[in-house]
Image (tube, rainbow, N blue to C red; front, side, top):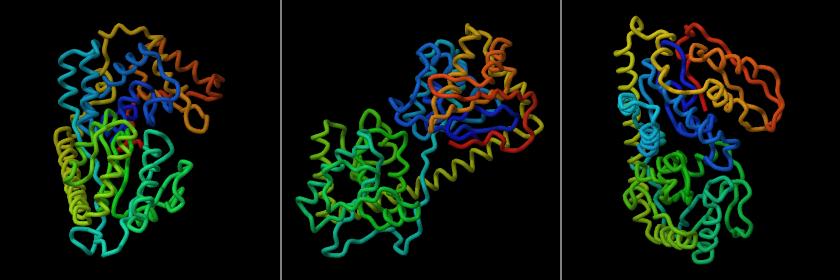
Length: 402
């Protein structure tokens, strides 16, 4: 498995790409890009980005690639729409992409509980425990969360217990709110395991694993939809297993979230009903995910016995595209753009070309030249191009992590 849209493996062992942010990788040359915006760092220009997309996407048509799994149907559609709009792909190639691309919603397994429903019953007079967790930034809804928390404290101070997990909470956050800048993993799970509501007013998520995890711990997820949260309906259904408000201006979102949270505090029966629905949805999704994975790998290895698996050269030949009118120096620039992108800590990210059979002499020379230390706008770094003429015999060599 090649996880989170890393460069495809170049050996004869069948592999599956499990994609979180595939479009960012193909268009921007980064392994994972938070936010797709200002935090993305240097961007390729539009034409280089298009060429990079065409070159790298075609690698997934290799017979060694058994499938590409997207975390949501929304992101699968985004990718297939981009392929459909790119004139470099034939109709046959578009059909092959459509057949190869699937969806698998990641779902964490709910923890075992003494109560079969996994519910946290509120005793009379017990406050409703509400948790917000998010890093700094407007897209995570910190300002909205702070405004809602402050108003809840003002209106019903004895009926809520509010916890804020995250660094640098906004100024003016009520002193009654418990602030936890960081938590160990086990402590975090214990906290959401004892809370009733998980408040997530984010306006952008590539998926939303924290919400899924909270729902699995019987927290009622309170979140919103919008242009950058269009997939949320694939995860939750409003008033069945979560609370999902419509996208709106900030002041309207604050008032809407406040009304929903007040209702959950006042009506523990509704809170318990939604908690049960969320936990059941996650548990069911986890079973479906395990079944899908089992079937996928069974089909993959049944359909591609070792004796018939394509060699590295066959796989590479299949995804070459002689019809692409690409200037070789332009392609090498697009490829190397990934290597010179600024990475965390101010270091240049290394980028390896594993299959030189795809490179023309001009492109190979450009990569060889880049092996020399260079100083640019993003500091000093070395790009390592590594020739691989033979497939790596080790099983699972294509495995990579975020």
